[in-house]
Length: 200
Ligand SMILES: [Fe+2]
Ligand SMILES: [Fe+2]
Image (cartoon, rainbow, N blue to C red):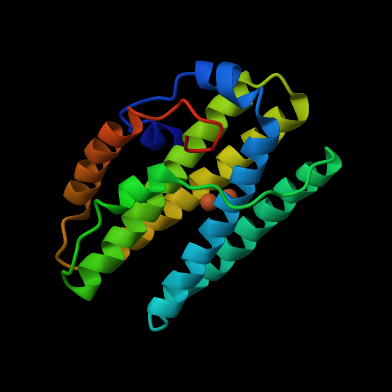
């Protein structure tokens, strides 16, 4: 996969033991949290459209992304129902909340947009990495195949966000900001990999 090399720039890989020790014994929890990750990804794309209606390329890309994320949501929900579960309430995502702390406070509209795009790229990259680890280690053929497929899709979303960040960067040094973001994410994620949520 062409994007894999870039994604592996994430500085800290997830320990596969997270799948063995946590995920496999909490499938219902994981599926509920995962469904809401997809819904939140769609909501985030809608917010970007609402805040930037004049950026036609962004609007077009986000319109496509919303459809894909809601398709993912529906497919997770189908699996939840197939397995006799009911979608639970939205779970807290402390990882995402911590990443949000890195976003510029104040700053120009452009800085805020670029940061929001990089923040979105980061969540796609880490979700992609988590799906990869799950697809490789989960002892459940249906979910292994499903997470492999989603890994490829989220890698595409990561590329979309990075490309948009570069496109709208103007004089902002996107590469530097992304490097700093990666370093921050590595600090944050050190404390995760223990809970039964996608970013837990
Ligand atoms: Fe997704
Ligand atoms: Fe995505």
